[in-house]
Image 1 (cartoon, rainbow, N blue to C red):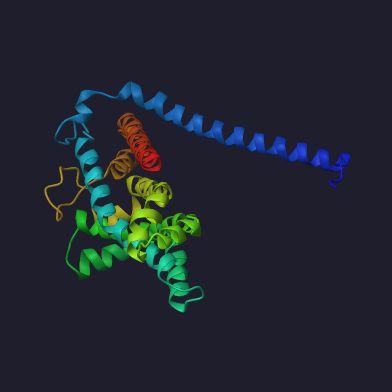
Image 2: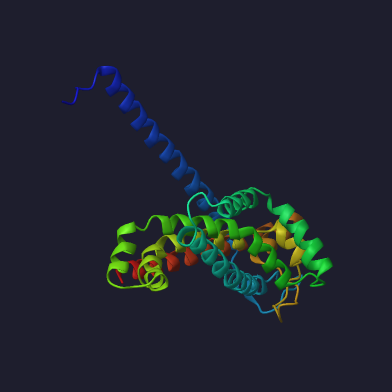
Length: 279
Protein backbone atom coordinates (compact mmCIF):
# COMPACT_ATOMS: atom_id res chain seq x y z
CA UNK A 1 0.00 0.00 0.00
CA UNK A 2 1.38 3.39 -1.03
CA UNK A 3 1.50 5.89 1.78
CA UNK A 4 -0.02 9.32 1.02
CA UNK A 5 2.45 12.15 0.67
CA UNK A 6 2.88 14.37 3.67
CA UNK A 7 2.68 18.16 3.42
CA UNK A 8 6.44 18.46 3.71
CA UNK A 9 7.00 16.01 0.85
CA UNK A 10 4.45 17.78 -1.35
CA UNK A 11 6.14 21.10 -0.57
CA UNK A 12 9.55 19.62 -1.42
CA UNK A 13 8.24 18.21 -4.73
CA UNK A 14 6.70 21.54 -5.72
CA UNK A 15 9.88 23.37 -4.74
CA UNK A 16 12.06 21.06 -6.85
CA UNK A 17 9.64 21.38 -9.78
CA UNK A 18 9.73 25.18 -9.55
CA UNK A 19 13.54 25.16 -9.36
CA UNK A 20 13.71 22.90 -12.42
CA UNK A 21 11.49 25.24 -14.43
CA UNK A 22 13.46 28.24 -13.17
CA UNK A 23 16.85 26.81 -14.19
CA UNK A 24 15.46 25.72 -17.56
CA UNK A 25 14.07 29.22 -18.15
CA UNK A 26 17.39 30.81 -17.18
CA UNK A 27 19.31 28.50 -19.53
CA UNK A 28 16.98 29.18 -22.45
CA UNK A 29 17.03 32.91 -21.73
CA UNK A 30 20.83 33.02 -21.73
CA UNK A 31 20.94 31.06 -24.98
CA UNK A 32 18.40 33.35 -26.65
CA UNK A 33 20.23 36.43 -25.40
CA UNK A 34 23.58 35.27 -26.79
CA UNK A 35 22.12 34.24 -30.15
CA UNK A 36 20.04 37.41 -30.38
CA UNK A 37 23.01 39.61 -29.49
CA UNK A 38 25.16 38.01 -32.19
CA UNK A 39 22.42 38.20 -34.81
CA UNK A 40 21.55 41.81 -33.98
CA UNK A 41 25.18 42.90 -34.24
CA UNK A 42 26.19 40.66 -37.13
CA UNK A 43 23.35 40.58 -39.68
CA UNK A 44 23.52 44.34 -40.49
CA UNK A 45 27.20 43.95 -41.40
CA UNK A 46 26.85 40.99 -43.76
CA UNK A 47 27.82 42.06 -47.28
CA UNK A 48 28.93 40.43 -50.52
CA UNK A 49 32.55 41.50 -50.12
CA UNK A 50 32.81 39.15 -47.13
CA UNK A 51 32.25 36.21 -49.48
CA UNK A 52 34.78 37.01 -52.18
CA UNK A 53 37.20 34.32 -53.28
CA UNK A 54 40.31 36.01 -51.89
CA UNK A 55 40.99 37.62 -48.52
CA UNK A 56 42.42 41.12 -48.58
CA UNK A 57 42.86 43.89 -46.04
CA UNK A 58 39.94 45.70 -47.71
CA UNK A 59 37.27 42.98 -47.74
CA UNK A 60 38.21 40.58 -44.87
CA UNK A 61 36.55 37.80 -46.86
CA UNK A 62 35.52 34.75 -44.84
CA UNK A 63 34.96 32.44 -47.85
CA UNK A 64 38.47 30.89 -47.70
CA UNK A 65 37.89 30.22 -44.01
CA UNK A 66 34.49 28.63 -44.68
CA UNK A 67 35.99 26.28 -47.29
CA UNK A 68 38.91 25.50 -44.97
CA UNK A 69 36.53 24.74 -42.10
CA UNK A 70 34.49 22.24 -44.10
CA UNK A 71 37.64 20.62 -45.51
CA UNK A 72 39.13 20.28 -42.03
CA UNK A 73 35.90 18.85 -40.58
CA UNK A 74 35.61 16.23 -43.33
CA UNK A 75 39.27 15.20 -43.11
CA UNK A 76 39.23 14.96 -39.31
CA UNK A 77 36.01 12.95 -39.20
CA UNK A 78 37.29 10.58 -41.89
CA UNK A 79 40.24 9.79 -39.63
CA UNK A 80 38.66 9.94 -36.17
CA UNK A 81 35.23 8.33 -36.67
CA UNK A 82 36.40 4.94 -38.03
CA UNK A 83 39.05 4.69 -35.31
CA UNK A 84 36.63 5.74 -32.56
CA UNK A 85 33.80 3.44 -33.66
CA UNK A 86 36.17 0.48 -34.13
CA UNK A 87 37.63 1.02 -30.67
CA UNK A 88 34.15 1.20 -29.11
CA UNK A 89 33.04 -1.97 -30.91
CA UNK A 90 36.08 -3.78 -29.54
CA UNK A 91 35.47 -2.51 -26.00
CA UNK A 92 31.76 -3.39 -25.94
CA UNK A 93 31.39 -6.42 -28.20
CA UNK A 94 34.69 -8.30 -28.14
CA UNK A 95 36.09 -7.97 -24.62
CA UNK A 96 35.12 -9.58 -21.37
CA UNK A 97 34.00 -7.60 -18.34
CA UNK A 98 36.85 -6.67 -16.04
CA UNK A 99 39.45 -6.92 -18.80
CA UNK A 100 42.57 -5.02 -17.75
CA UNK A 101 43.23 -3.68 -21.24
CA UNK A 102 39.69 -2.29 -21.40
CA UNK A 103 40.19 -0.48 -18.10
CA UNK A 104 43.45 1.02 -19.37
CA UNK A 105 41.83 2.23 -22.61
CA UNK A 106 38.88 3.77 -20.76
CA UNK A 107 41.17 5.47 -18.27
CA UNK A 108 43.25 6.85 -21.14
CA UNK A 109 40.18 8.23 -22.93
CA UNK A 110 38.97 9.91 -19.75
CA UNK A 111 42.38 11.51 -19.23
CA UNK A 112 42.54 12.68 -22.85
CA UNK A 113 39.04 14.17 -22.59
CA UNK A 114 40.15 16.40 -19.71
CA UNK A 115 43.25 17.86 -21.35
CA UNK A 116 42.90 21.56 -22.37
CA UNK A 117 42.95 22.24 -26.10
CA UNK A 118 46.01 24.49 -25.79
CA UNK A 119 47.99 21.46 -24.60
CA UNK A 120 46.87 19.53 -27.68
CA UNK A 121 48.01 22.48 -29.77
CA UNK A 122 51.46 22.49 -28.20
CA UNK A 123 51.75 18.73 -28.65
CA UNK A 124 50.67 19.00 -32.28
CA UNK A 125 53.18 21.78 -32.90
CA UNK A 126 56.06 19.83 -31.36
CA UNK A 127 55.18 16.44 -32.88
CA UNK A 128 53.31 16.93 -36.16
CA UNK A 129 54.61 20.35 -37.17
CA UNK A 130 58.25 20.09 -36.02
CA UNK A 131 59.21 16.43 -35.48
CA UNK A 132 57.34 14.91 -38.44
CA UNK A 133 57.96 18.01 -40.57
CA UNK A 134 54.37 18.64 -41.64
CA UNK A 135 54.72 22.35 -40.94
CA UNK A 136 51.70 24.56 -40.35
CA UNK A 137 49.27 22.62 -42.48
CA UNK A 138 45.79 21.16 -42.70
CA UNK A 139 47.04 17.62 -42.05
CA UNK A 140 48.85 18.71 -38.88
CA UNK A 141 45.71 20.45 -37.60
CA UNK A 142 43.52 17.50 -38.58
CA UNK A 143 45.68 14.92 -36.80
CA UNK A 144 45.79 17.10 -33.69
CA UNK A 145 41.99 17.45 -33.69
CA UNK A 146 41.66 13.71 -34.28
CA UNK A 147 43.46 13.01 -31.01
CA UNK A 148 41.33 15.67 -29.33
CA UNK A 149 37.91 14.31 -30.37
CA UNK A 150 38.71 10.58 -30.18
CA UNK A 151 37.71 10.32 -26.47
CA UNK A 152 34.36 11.95 -27.26
CA UNK A 153 33.64 9.65 -30.21
CA UNK A 154 34.72 6.56 -28.28
CA UNK A 155 32.66 7.27 -25.16
CA UNK A 156 29.47 8.28 -26.98
CA UNK A 157 29.68 5.30 -29.36
CA UNK A 158 30.34 2.98 -26.45
CA UNK A 159 27.24 4.22 -24.62
CA UNK A 160 25.19 3.92 -27.82
CA UNK A 161 26.25 0.29 -28.27
CA UNK A 162 25.51 -0.49 -24.62
CA UNK A 163 22.00 0.96 -25.00
CA UNK A 164 21.09 -1.70 -27.58
CA UNK A 165 19.18 -4.45 -25.68
CA UNK A 166 20.90 -7.82 -25.44
CA UNK A 167 17.72 -9.36 -26.80
CA UNK A 168 18.57 -7.91 -30.22
CA UNK A 169 21.88 -9.75 -30.23
CA UNK A 170 20.36 -12.96 -28.90
CA UNK A 171 17.60 -12.84 -31.51
CA UNK A 172 20.16 -12.42 -34.29
CA UNK A 173 22.22 -15.33 -32.97
CA UNK A 174 19.08 -17.48 -32.71
CA UNK A 175 18.39 -16.84 -36.41
CA UNK A 176 21.84 -18.10 -37.30
CA UNK A 177 23.75 -14.83 -37.64
CA UNK A 178 27.38 -14.75 -36.67
CA UNK A 179 28.97 -12.17 -34.43
CA UNK A 180 30.02 -9.83 -37.22
CA UNK A 181 26.74 -10.15 -39.15
CA UNK A 182 24.68 -9.44 -36.02
CA UNK A 183 26.89 -6.44 -35.32
CA UNK A 184 26.56 -4.98 -38.82
CA UNK A 185 22.89 -5.77 -39.40
CA UNK A 186 21.36 -5.35 -35.92
CA UNK A 187 23.55 -3.64 -33.33
CA UNK A 188 25.09 -0.81 -35.37
CA UNK A 189 21.85 0.27 -37.12
CA UNK A 190 20.10 0.41 -33.74
CA UNK A 191 22.88 2.54 -32.25
CA UNK A 192 23.29 4.99 -35.15
CA UNK A 193 21.32 7.84 -33.48
CA UNK A 194 23.63 7.70 -30.45
CA UNK A 195 26.73 7.45 -32.63
CA UNK A 196 25.61 10.45 -34.69
CA UNK A 197 25.07 12.41 -31.49
CA UNK A 198 28.73 11.90 -30.67
CA UNK A 199 29.76 12.83 -34.21
CA UNK A 200 27.70 16.03 -33.96
CA UNK A 201 29.41 16.98 -30.69
CA UNK A 202 32.80 16.21 -32.22
CA UNK A 203 31.96 18.30 -35.29
CA UNK A 204 30.95 21.20 -33.07
CA UNK A 205 34.27 21.01 -31.27
CA UNK A 206 36.18 20.96 -34.56
CA UNK A 207 34.27 23.94 -35.93
CA UNK A 208 34.72 25.98 -32.75
CA UNK A 209 38.36 25.11 -32.04
CA UNK A 210 40.97 27.86 -32.18
CA UNK A 211 43.85 27.30 -29.75
CA UNK A 212 44.96 23.93 -31.14
CA UNK A 213 44.71 25.09 -34.76
CA UNK A 214 46.68 28.29 -34.33
CA UNK A 215 49.71 26.18 -33.33
CA UNK A 216 49.24 23.48 -35.99
CA UNK A 217 47.21 24.62 -39.02
CA UNK A 218 48.31 28.24 -38.86
CA UNK A 219 46.18 31.28 -39.66
CA UNK A 220 46.73 31.98 -43.35
CA UNK A 221 43.52 33.24 -44.93
CA UNK A 222 43.69 31.41 -48.25
CA UNK A 223 41.86 28.66 -50.09
CA UNK A 224 43.24 25.23 -49.13
CA UNK A 225 45.40 23.95 -51.98
CA UNK A 226 46.32 20.62 -50.40
CA UNK A 227 46.91 18.78 -47.15
CA UNK A 228 50.22 20.59 -46.70
CA UNK A 229 48.75 24.11 -47.03
CA UNK A 230 48.30 26.40 -44.07
CA UNK A 231 44.67 27.35 -43.47
CA UNK A 232 42.51 29.59 -41.31
CA UNK A 233 39.24 28.11 -40.09
CA UNK A 234 36.19 30.25 -39.45
CA UNK A 235 36.70 30.21 -35.68
CA UNK A 236 40.35 31.25 -36.07
CA UNK A 237 39.23 33.92 -38.55
CA UNK A 238 36.75 35.23 -35.97
CA UNK A 239 39.43 35.24 -33.27
CA UNK A 240 41.89 37.05 -35.54
CA UNK A 241 39.44 39.80 -36.48
CA UNK A 242 38.27 40.35 -32.90
CA UNK A 243 41.81 40.32 -31.48
CA UNK A 244 42.89 43.04 -33.89
CA UNK A 245 40.06 45.21 -32.58
CA UNK A 246 39.54 47.17 -35.80
CA UNK A 247 37.26 44.73 -37.63
CA UNK A 248 34.61 44.08 -34.97
CA UNK A 249 31.73 44.51 -37.44
CA UNK A 250 33.24 41.82 -39.67
CA UNK A 251 33.85 39.66 -36.59
CA UNK A 252 30.15 39.76 -35.66
CA UNK A 253 29.22 38.95 -39.27
CA UNK A 254 31.58 35.97 -39.13
CA UNK A 255 29.95 34.84 -35.89
CA UNK A 256 26.55 34.83 -37.62
CA UNK A 257 27.86 32.60 -40.41
CA UNK A 258 29.49 30.32 -37.85
CA UNK A 259 26.16 29.93 -36.04
CA UNK A 260 24.41 29.12 -39.30
CA UNK A 261 26.99 26.47 -40.20
CA UNK A 262 26.62 24.76 -36.81
CA UNK A 263 22.83 24.89 -37.19
CA UNK A 264 23.00 23.36 -40.66
CA UNK A 265 25.30 20.56 -39.48
CA UNK A 266 23.07 19.74 -36.51
CA UNK A 267 19.89 19.80 -38.62
CA UNK A 268 21.39 17.57 -41.29
CA UNK A 269 22.69 15.10 -38.71
CA UNK A 270 19.32 14.96 -36.94
CA UNK A 271 17.61 14.30 -40.29
CA UNK A 272 20.03 11.49 -41.11
CA UNK A 273 19.56 9.95 -37.65
CA UNK A 274 15.78 10.06 -38.05
CA UNK A 275 15.99 8.37 -41.45
CA UNK A 276 18.13 5.58 -40.02
CA UNK A 277 15.78 5.17 -37.06
CA UNK A 278 12.75 4.82 -39.34
CA UNK A 279 14.63 2.40 -41.55
